[in-house]
Length: 518
Image 1 (cartoon, rainbow, N blue to C red):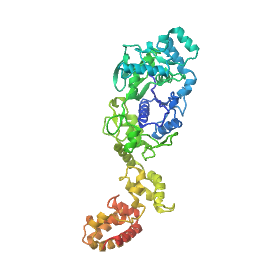
Image 2: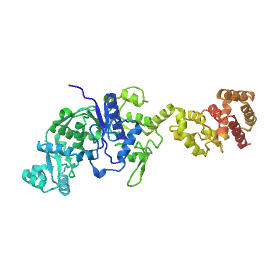
Image 3: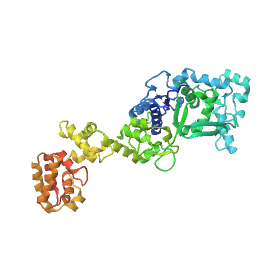
Image 4: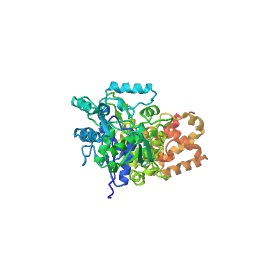
């Protein structure tokens, strides 16, 4: 038998912004496909039209593009199995054909129950002590469906246009086995499986039928999805069996949940709002309320740092390496290193990933990105030398070790762009002595004559001047920093002096000394 080309799919519903858990599902599907020389598809599962949100589909595509998850086939790029939106496929009658096939073969049935009848059934079962009342083999004969009504009454209702849904007929006391790529063999008793709705009264298929039909027709080989779908897996296996598609069923893998940073439960938007971190890749504005939800992109995260972090939420390479490019992730990714247990999200670790990527980014690229922010923050004209690429590159080199995001650079390194107007009082009170004034005045003269004004000559000038005054260099360095920057800590001191230049350093020293107490 010829081995099939690997084909995975990401099939989100356009019901709002794409949660980072959904991005991880897309990422794992993408990594697995690329690792095995296969294709990654994007399919939009918009079967629930009541929950459809305008702009959500475009958001999903933009989010995947930002992450570098390349769509080989599907919505936004097309392909041989178009259309890739389930609402469009429904109009072609694709799903109804298979629902009717299941009915003809005795594996599904028409159900005419009204909303009131369904609610009455749930209340009756709850009174009888059933904690989770469901429509299943135990109740179907007492409901309004083609099994309880008989063929003549069923046909009469169909002819009359009575609204109906199509339900899966689950046989009791069956053992259903799923071979999961992460969890191994998982067995289910059919008694816990309800008669799931396959086709709704508006003719739209539910997920349970639609994803199976589409996976088969689109030749999907591996279905990698979230753990929340595991309880539905036995129904899905049964549908494959009932349609005679056992040999075309993709290999399933159910990914572990993303857990909130503290306590129990799935990571939610509320956790992000409460603890101050995004749960969406891009910023999202709710079209109905105008509420804005923050995104990783807008918060200053690099897409490759975000992807690297996501990859480690549920997977590890089996080595000590933590930083992976997309190509490295593709090379290293295997399903046998995906965990079964939930993965706890750590906001601080996410910031750490961004910090590591910041340190690796070319300084010239950072300079280009922060130039506008620096100009607006300090009201600099376009001709100001502090906006030159060479100046900004050196500033970025100095600051990259002290920030986690590019946008923090102008704030954390404000002294590189603006002279101080105050001096850290605690350090001045502890370190400043009036007897240091002759030394700093002398140092100012020597620094003005220092040529070239580069790190080594600057360092040598400071040491020589200190020695000539009988002062240890270590005793005056923090005070020198405060006089020039106003702060007791910051970037490399000698590097800062070199960047500022002789004229600016000497001017700042003069002004700082005038501000010191007598």
